[in-house]
Image (tube, rainbow, N blue to C red; front, top):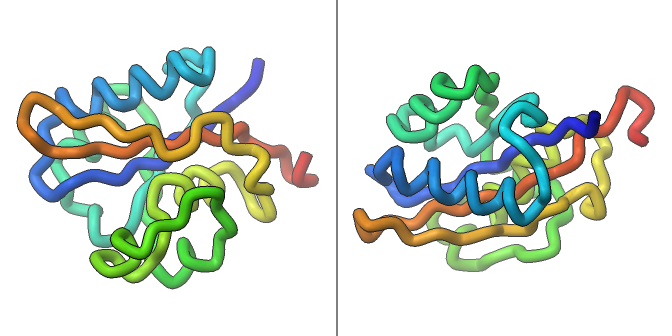
Length: 138
């Protein structure tokens, strides 16, 4: 069974329902199930984001947070200068998904790139999904 990691980005104060809907839509795009997700990840400035913490707890996913300097070193298909302006890195969800998937995970491991969802709360959540690599990078 293929294992996946989920990278999460969001507006501050986003509702759990918005993040949940974004993840469900991204998993559907990947043809993946929640049970196949082995970890979720985001940026350190989101360590206190209630919706991300609640989602990870709800699904029993370990939630990792990476500093912007580390995320910025990851090559991604959809870098954003707007994201860099606010976070210090051009990518949160794509880079976090790749980092959580394992060291040296290539950009080609992304099965869902930067899926954006605007919730009923008017806030945005962005989800990326990567195929997890083994210790040998395959």
